[in-house]
Amino acid sequence: MKHGLVKLDTVWGVTGGMRPVKYLVRQIKLLLKELLSSGDIAEATRCLQELEVPHFHHELVYEAVVLVLEDMKESTMDLIRDFLKSLSDAVIVTVDQLKNGFTRVYREMPDISLDVPLAYNILDKFISKCEEKNFLPKQVIRDTPSRGRKRFVSEGDGGALKEQDV
Image (cartoon, rainbow, N blue to C red):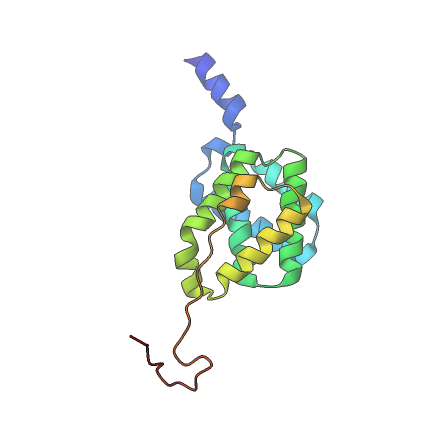
C-alpha cells in the first residue's frame, strides 16, 4: 500500500492531487488574469508549475481559450497564443492536454456562442494564429467547429421575402 501511495505522489504531485477541483480552477483563472495584466509568460509558467497538477493542464488550455473568446482583443489572442506555445515547447503542457482542452472548448461552443455571438469567428482567427506558430496538433486544427452562416431574409433585399420559382 505504501509503495502505491509513493507512486501516486510521483505521478500526481504531493499537493496538487489533494486540492479540490474548484480551488484549482480558481487558481488557473487567477493565473490567466495575472498573465493578461502583466504580460509575464515566465511568471505565469512558474505559477502553473507550482500548482503541481500536470494531469489538469487541460483546464488551463480550456480556460485560456474561453478567455480569448470572451475578451475578443487581438492582444489577448497573441498573448495566450504565445503562452500556450511556450508551455507546449517546454513540454509543460503535453499534446494530449492541448487536445483535451481544445476539445472541451469545441464541445461548449454552442453555449459559448450564446454569450459571445462572434465566438466561432474569434475561435477560427485564434486557431489560425496558433497554426502560424506551429504548435497545435493537426487534429485540433482539423476538428475546429464552424457555424454555417445563416442568411436572414432582410439581407440585401430590403426586407422583402423572395419569391421562389417552382
